[in-house]
Image 1 (cartoon, one colour):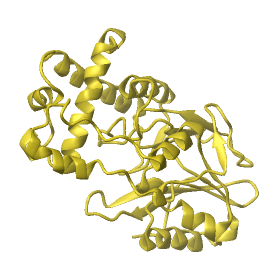
Image 2: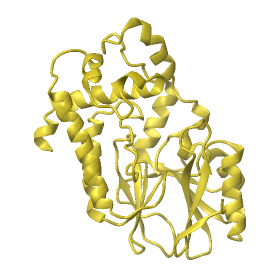
Image 3: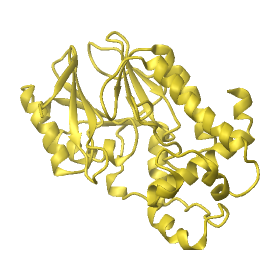
Length: 307
């Protein structure tokens, strides 16, 4: 595997290996600024292998850790932000993330309540499995920002206009980045080329994550720029992909609306799942139930009428 792939002038993709046997890698990006320094987007997992992949890419670019001017985090999940602490220690560079994501990370550190499995109608024999899957992530992998970002901010990247776009849904403070002159959108996990990202994966929010996500899809889709996602590969056709993702969630909401009675468990069993309901175990089952609960709330709030 090559150390990096150049996507556009001064923008380089680095495949960061992921542990666990699921997706093989996340995608980090190295952005060169007009002063010859680097800005890292999503350094990846908190492993030696991940740090080594970034180090090799910088070496291949003829750069050292001292050349890193900033570390931007699209969202708090460990496969994107777990390597922040080690990279900050090696480079001394500040860590930047959206202010809402910083609040979500702090809430996770304090401890989030587990879902009410009884209220969801989960059979007693399946509850221990789900309780284990719902354990909070290690606070050691959560990023601590030095700089808080807000929607519409321009990053301090000399020679480039990179704007912060707040796109909640996957997590409360997920952000995308729009390089306005290169017409590139760093989409994190908000939009992936073939995978449907889970929603509501950063703790409770005052608004419905599905409704929030649909707003963000419309905003990002309107750019129709080349997409640089957090997994898989860069792609074009962003407008078509965001429309397909929106229809996926609206279709799921219509499925849920067709079964207004029963518990979350009862409704989830009637829905269409990629690998089939019976194949869902542990975290995938927990995610399916959580998504069903979010869709029920979305329907109850009139989301289908708005959509």
